[in-house]
Length: 207
Image 1: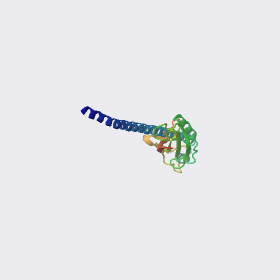
Image 2: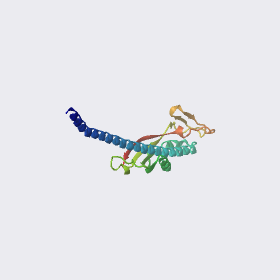
Image 3: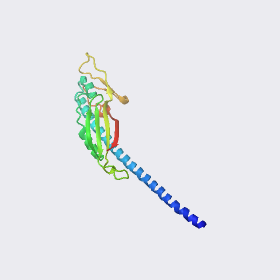
Image 4: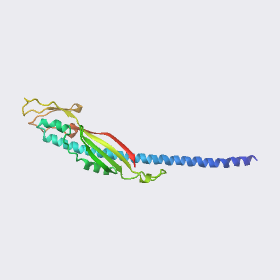
């Protein structure tokens, strides 16, 4: 009789065991799906960040070239440092960087103002993938990033009595001071000295 009762208890426990194991497996697959989605979103955000920064860096280099072309005309410096009349044609670099990070640019546009910048939206090239969550096999992560170009230097405009052989002194971040001599322009600040490029924000979602 005792053996019979033990056998009955084991038989009753077996369905409970199966239910618990099934529940644990479901949770494991659910966490796997969450991990897949998170990895996909992170990849898309990385691509968006890289694309926005690439576009902004391309325009930063153009602004630097414009400043170098006008280095002897200080009346143009502030306009260039503020990014006025900037040509927002850096999106080609955004497309390239997104592709290198397995994503496609769905929107890229310049953001005028002080500081100027770029808004870039990308879509991951690969879907989230099959999981226990319905529809993830056709779900693509999208992310948006904004990068801006800020001047790192400032100067005091010259007075009306300043001669043509004098240029303003540039004071840049991190203690950089450039005492420019119009007769000796071999040592000039580079793009990284004149402008800082950084991300402002970004967001990701799945569609």
